[in-house]
Structures are given as C-alpha cells and as structure tokens.
Image (cartoon, rainbow, N blue to C red; front, side):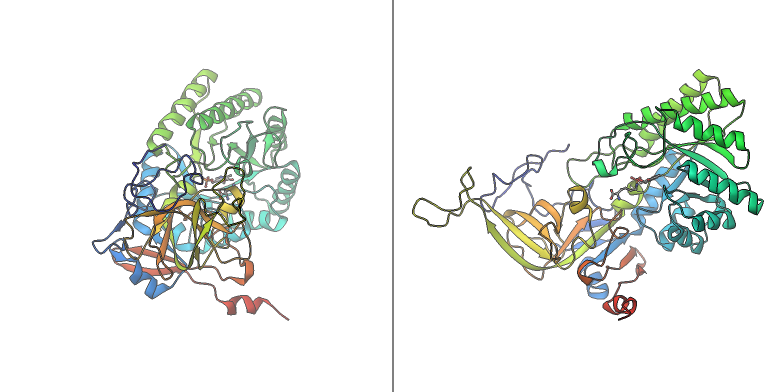
Length: 480
Ligand SMILES: Cc1ncc(COP(=O)(O)O)c(C=O)c1O
Ligand SMILES: N[C@@H](CCCC[NH3+])C(=O)O
C-alpha cells in the first residue's frame, strides 16, 4: 500500500473517509501507478493522452467515452511477451474484446484466449491464426465446439465429462483430433472478491484435484484416444496480487501432470497457468512486475519438473486485466454536484435536541453521464476506483466525493471514495483510470443507456475502434 501526505481539506468528512484513502497533498496530482503511461496533466491543467488534450477529444467523440492509450497497451504487451519469452502468452479477450486490440496483441506475438463463439468470431475477424486461439468455458454449446473444430482452434480447455463426451463424438464424426487441456481446480483460495475466485472447492469451474476428478478426466481422455491431451490448465481467479497463490497453483498442477505422465507413460507437452494478475485501481494495490512473476513461475516449474523427473512442459499464461486494464480511462461529463450531509453524532441521529437538523459529516455526490452500465465492477464486486478532473486543475481545497451514475439504482456508484477539488462543478469533465478491463466488456443497456465508444489515441491521432451505441441501435432490436 502506498502512502500520501495530507493537504488542504474542505468539509467535515473525517468519519466518512475510509482508512486507506489518504488526504491528497495536491488534489490534481496524477499517481503514475494508476494512469495510462501516456496520460499527463498539461500546463493548462487539462489531462492529455499521447499529447492530445482530453477536452479536445471529448469535443470530437463526446462523453462518456473510453479513451484507449494505445501506446500503453503496446508497451504492456511487449513487457509481458519479454518477461515470458520462455512461454506462450494468451491475451484473455474477455477483459476487452475488439478486432483492433486483438490485432495489436498479436503484433507482439501474443495468442488469444476466447470463451464464447462471439469472442471467437472477433478473433477470427481480427485475422488471428486459429492455431493461436484457445477456447474456454464451463458450458460450451455444441455449436461452439463445432465452430472450434471447424476453424481448427489450437486448444480447447475442457471443463466437464459431458463436454469430453461431446468432443469425442464430434471428433469421430469429423475426423478431427482436437487438442485439449483439462481445467483443474487446484483448491487455492485466492485473496480476491468471492465472485472472481475460481479455484476454491465450491464453484463451477474445472475438475477438482483434491477428490481425483481432474486425474480421472485426464485419464479418460488418454484412455479414449480421440482427443489429443496437451496438458493441464489452471486458473485461480482474477485481480490477485499474491504471487505465492500462483506458485502454489503451479506446483500442484505440475505434480499432477507428472503423475499422469508416469502412470500413462506419455509426455504432456504443455501446462497453462491461467490469468488473474492484478492491476492497481487505488493506492491499496501494488501489482508485481511481469518479470518477477515470470521468474517465480519458471523457478517452480523447473524445480517441480526436475523433482518429478520429467522435462519441464511449455508454459502458457492468460493475462487479460493486467494488459488492457491500465490502458483505458473513462471520461464523463459531470451533470450535478450535491453535498449530502450526514449526522455528526455517532448514534446516527439526524436532529439536535430542539429538533433542528444537524449538519455533520458531508460527502459530495458527483453525478456523471454514465454509470453502472459502463462500469459494473463497483456494484458487482465492491471494487474501488479513483478519479480526477480532466478539463482543468481544481482546488486547492479537496472534498471527499462519491461519483455516481445516472441509473435508477442507489448502488450505481462508479467511485465510492475519492478526493476531488472542492470547486468541482456541473460541466466539468471527470476521468476514471483503470477501466480497460471488464468495463466495456461487462457493459449493459440498463435504463436504455447506450454503451460508450472506445477511442484509440496515440501520437498520430485518435480513431474510434468501437462505435458509440445509439438509441436507434436499441430500438432496432425492439420489434414491437
Ligand atoms: C480461464 C481464464 N483465463 C484468463 C482469465 C483472465 O483473467 P485476468 O483478466 O484476471 O487476467 C480468466 C478470467 O478470470 C479466466 O477465467
Ligand atoms: N469480470 C471479472 C473478472 C472475472 C473474469 C473472468 N473469469 C472482473 O471484472 O473482475
């Protein structure tokens, strides 16, 4: 966790401020660990991305909009590819899936992980070699499996006996021998939100290692012979900062793989360690560098393989969030600013002894022109985000603020706790960093709010890579 110094304050919010949120010394400061690598505050106080002023981009593309710092994403693809040069890096397209982004990832040698026919279609439309695509999912339809075979995807990660049976049948019918991996639930309790942890026992993904199901599934494939077993696959969850959780998972997976190799006298050439590497959304988060993660995983795989007397399998990983998350910001226009006063009394009483209304702690509610339809994560996972004014520097006094959307829902919160300049006004632009992953991809049309566009920005200019949805788009699907 990172610490900041206290600065100028506005309002009485002491009882409302979460302990981890320090009062900023300069409410306009951008902390580099939160913002895309090519975003800075210009001399006039407005944010710039790759040299383009955010207010100018907004004039051209409107709000709300996801602004994609293409150079940031390129540099992260390069960082991960270099750190894992001994492995295959699959970009997990569920984090954000568009043709432009998949093309960029492939320029850096990254492969692509998809988990539905829709994501597969985007990857194919982006020109990704099907052999470089991995297909996931706990409930792939027959149609999805057929599409995977038809296009020749490089690997299918199987998740149930039903799916293995279906694939064996399809292999018989088509004469194709699909390459598969077995998704193993390694039983690691990752420190993350319950809904995004995937390797504790009581959840839907994979075959349990502990009760022998994973061994049985792999054995079934090896006995059957209709499918080509590449190796095992693990994925312990998402937004994980604890490298030791990945290490324990890798250790358990390689031990099971070694046992299968010994029992069946086969060589399983690959082992997939999944994704889940965390990114910084607030000062609470301190993600590890890819090189450190790579080194730790490589050490474990080499050590465990040597101990088991097997050649080390080719490793693959599937980061999504760590690559695309930090590369985007969402820019909104502020519509209303409302101080909300809460009782100063610890018992929560709102009125004084004479019945007069007490004005105790206060929080600024800042409403913007988007909300949970463009970032569901705070409502779904209680995720914390940060924000700043984008059209100017404000202050110097800071107010504890809560950024909320325009949806008809009290939980429609985008930034639960952050300091904004006390002079924040309707008409100001607000930028939220770290929205590249699982924001547009989990977006919705709740309240018939159309989803924002994604605008790629680099030194040469700005272009829309995903168009803004319109009310006409929504009406087109409403057949009356
Ligand atoms: C199988 C699998 N691989 C990769 C990922 C990508 O995870 P993240 O975006 O956290 O790296 C996920 C999502 O959690 C997943 O389920
Ligand atoms: N959608 C989740 C991550 C889970 C992704 C896939 N298993 C998030 O926003 O954090």
